Length: 198
Image (cartoon, rainbow, N blue to C red; front, side, top):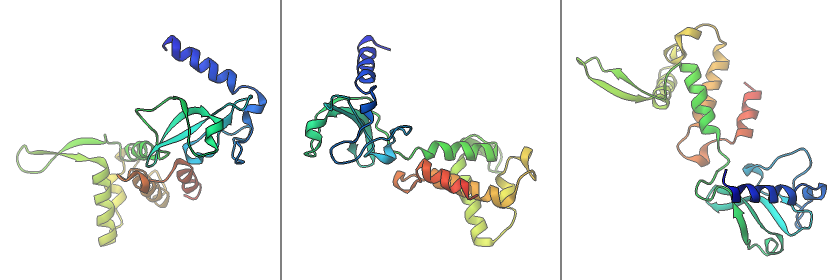
């Protein structure tokens, strides 16, 4: 870690370390003790003990946020003077469920996200994407009402060692998580709630 970054991080920790750093902003939003900052709750902020600085997620685009520190005085007028931003070139969007969805699909199928398969025509091989393969099987199932669609995608090493309804629900949740449109993906808290009801 570069020395200037270390100095800045120590400064931020000192600014926001005191108990009053968990106080609310002038508009009544704030982080309560024991909780953490989250893009999903962008109104949760940390206020420095002297009230001069605020730390939290600052919107930098449509569904794109950077962790930032800004002056609190201008924050009430809607304009922010950003003092520092951690992930300016790689903003986050609060929809980190895509990674979770890919991991779940890989675990269920036992396959890599991208691979090759034989077409049946001599030595021709085509690349397939795991997401597309699982979606195709689910669409076939929805059209034909076949009952063995899971057998075609589940890793043979766990075949028959699972509850079919639970596995179907996990696959459906995972497919929601890997939607191309990030706005269509559930947040991780929504995924958690869905998993509670699987």
